[in-house]
Image (cartoon, rainbow, N blue to C red; front, top):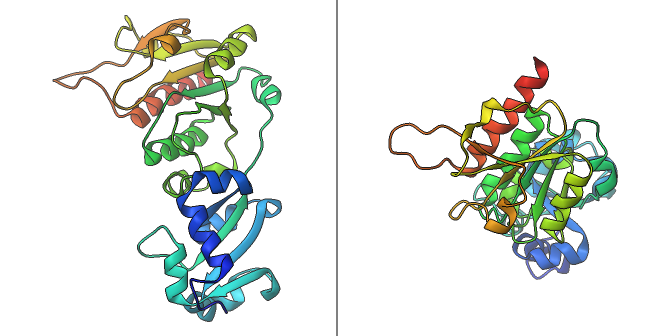
Length: 258
């Protein structure tokens, strides 16, 4: 059992929780909680850590040979977790790699394209909702918050394991490649003249959602085939980015079910 925060493994776990650069360099991220452990593809799991009290209570139910996980004292386990009330199990998971060509080649694909989303909870919620709505993939630009931020991972509730996503090195070029493959691009934009539900999304389509405070940049918005509008009553000017994305994704789901 590890009982000191000076232990090299413990120091590295703390680093992985805090630094996106460390996660990228090591190609791993941290997933807290029983659900995130159980839903992780087995081949993605690098290491599992449990707290002393969790091990005492759940020894028979962890589902791994004792040689495949490390026990941490409760105080040390709390130190390596990002949450205030840790659940007692933490998994180090390999970052998945999704192939761009395969992602874009899906018949009648449905894509969420995110520019500079900054709130980890928003990003995680969009992945989770995207899975529920049946989208094909999420594409983000490089200035979007790190997908492997601990708060983002928690917000996905396991969808991080199942929803393909790509961080586009050149976001505008990526969108152009999508259009070349016949994917129609729509931008949720205040300049939109027609309501979002006036369009036919049964063929391949992608939705651009912009930064929470500033919306889409002109450069990216200009790449859209059409602007679409979500109706606003009262004095509301705009919706939370994750809510706007949810409305659009479920409209696609509704049309395709119909």
